[in-house]
Amino acid sequence: GIDSRVRRRFKGTIPMPKIGYGSDKKTRHRLPSGFYKFVVNNVSELELLMMHNRTYAAEIAHSVSSQKRKAIVERAEQLNIKVTNANARLRAEEA
Image 1 (spheres, one colour):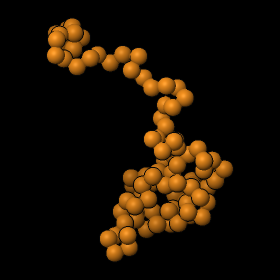
Image 2: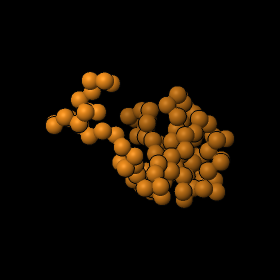
Image 3: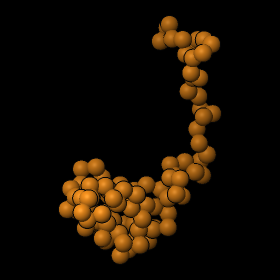
């Protein structure tokens, strides 16, 4: 805004967001594990990653129930697909 300390570059304020802070195009959106994230809501969406299991990792959507999560993780194991949040919503006895 008109009185912004950041915009006016006062000493001790955070640096302004600039285009130069962006990440490299080759590695943008890539997870530290080397995979790209692909959000999955059901087992049929997991089948899309069958041919791309070296590039993309599945991430189970937040709204998926624990019952469906189990089925998705099971199918991902069969297709050799990495699931980033496979342990989410697991009961302590089953883990």
